[in-house]
Length: 366
Image 1: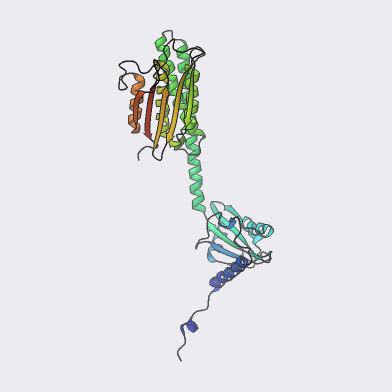
Image 2: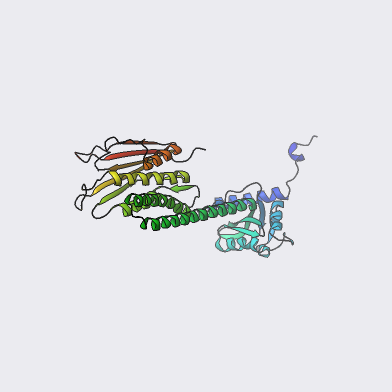
């Protein structure tokens, strides 16, 4: 009689038998409400993968099975002696997780390093009626992944240090300009120096924010706008010429090139407000000017709306004119691929005010 296919099937090898045993024990834990673990420690380092090495440890902490990948991982961690029948604690740091999982009855996950090798060890206790009856240890070589992580951290730290040094250099230049300005007697020359100091200060603010940020290529624009407005307020207002600034909304994160250009543009717009919106005699301690900066954004665009309640744009005002401030604004907005609109704010009588709407992409085009 011919033998059936089942009769001819090869018996499972050690690897298959061990995996079936682990499956049966985990299934029993599921039936007993002991698995999966409620806080998902098993998956906190990522789910199991086919390439993971597997150790099976009995209730005494001795290794009863080691897959080829597990043996390879332990060798890379400096374990040179026997593995089967040995106590996991004899493997140094590679076996510490087993001891911890036995004590806590919870999974123990840790990175084990030896030289340039890094292996993630995940020890999952096998429970039976609340008693620890062994453990499954998954070993994964993550050397390349950790190396990339370290390179990224090093790169980000280097970029932040560069931003910090640029900020310091810009502040030094500002200090030198202030010293030069104190030696000048011509009011227009002193005013030009002060404007340059504010422009440099706005760029320094961006680099200071980038030096503290988690991302090297993005910055929260809100963290720049608020100190920038304070800088303008401190430099251009006085008790005899009071102007109140109000910031609302949020601009979200923008690319670092956008942040630098937007900081300079906003500085120029606020400088323009202080130069033209409130001529001498229009403000006093009882009548303060009001300037609002409204921020908003969507997925691709940032919008900044600057409104004042001043006397409005002077007759013949041309936003495309040749003044230095407007030339800077126009050039930077064009470079960003944005749009800028000037209009009346619609206020009453002699104080119609001016409104400037600025829209730019959140990130530079690739």
